[in-house]
Amino acid sequence: MLVAVALAASMPALAADARAVGAAPPATAADRASRPVVTIYEFRSGVSEIGARGATDMFVTALVKSGRFRVVERSRLNEGVVREKQLNANGLATGDVGSTQLQGARFVFEGSVSQANASEDQRASGIGVGGMEVGGGSNRDTLAIDVRVVDASSGEVLDVVTAQRSVTATSSSLSGVGNLLSAVAGSRGYGIPVVPDVHVQQQHRESVDEALRSAIEAAVATLGERFGH
Image (cartoon, rainbow, N blue to C red; front, top):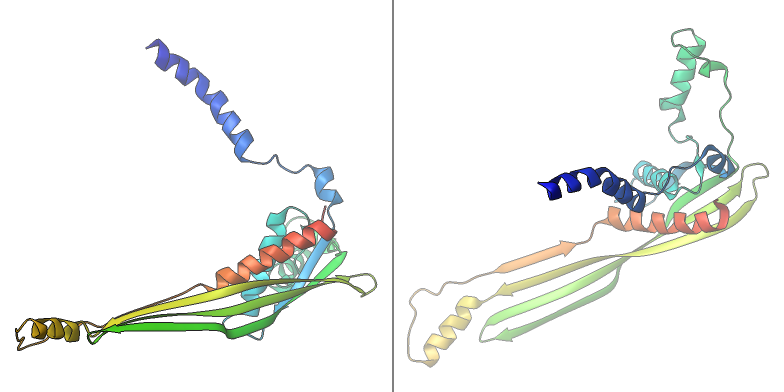
């Protein structure tokens, strides 16, 4: 009983210690104010599997989660912020956001999928035994992004960050099991009137979205080191 009471009494302190170890302290107002204000209008993509809007959302998410920048909305400005300002300016909402200026950005990021090499590396192999065939192969595509850093006041391109990731696909197949059974039975003097066969094929391809997100996060980490706070 005494042990249980002691454990119960110590639980709040243990929980507080766990929160202190597992989570970073919240940013102070001074820390946030010292971060450069950045934005991105659109992440361009000429690859059919990668949508520009989805890539833009991934980039904004990575910027915010990095904790190195203050991010202002531009890509969807007309869908939310401008509408809210119009409602307020017309007296349909409380507050004074209708007369408040938007926060200006110090840096504008311009992102693009700059490289998408399909089948950059291909390999295939197989082996046959007694009519049974086992095969496998792999295919590697390369995805790369470029992010330009533009000074919003002068329009000067200050830097370019490139990140590259691979997208791997693998395949395996098995066929002709019936041929092998028939060959083995024949070698022992047995005949199989009906020869069953098995054909199995399996394919796996890594997610393009995961590769894109990984490349974006790597690019944002570099941006944070060079321009963030």
